[in-house]
Image 1 (cartoon, rainbow, N blue to C red):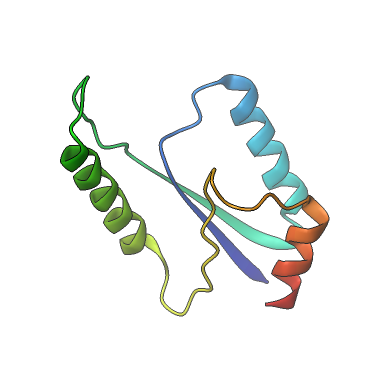
Image 2 (image 1 turned 135 degrees about the vertical axis):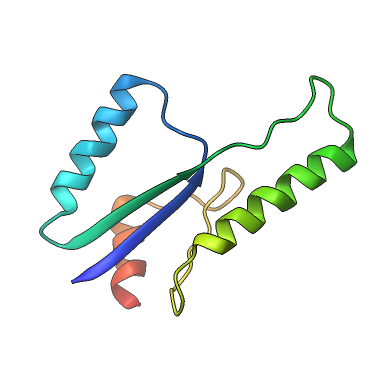
Length: 96
């Protein structure tokens, strides 16, 4: 069975989002083993300098990279990325 690791910075704070994530995990259980790793956010000052933001991003990136299993296929996702439908994302995963 395929294992899917989701590594993210921050935690789901809202109850409805945690419940939705649990529901998706339950629905996916016949098809894959899902592991979600939530990493702590790095703190910045109220008015961070560009260099402070860069250090924060680099530290969070290093923490993410440290959690990626060996020989894993990586799909990086961010708000600036291309939006995929569930079906298109599923096709991409299947092609791996």
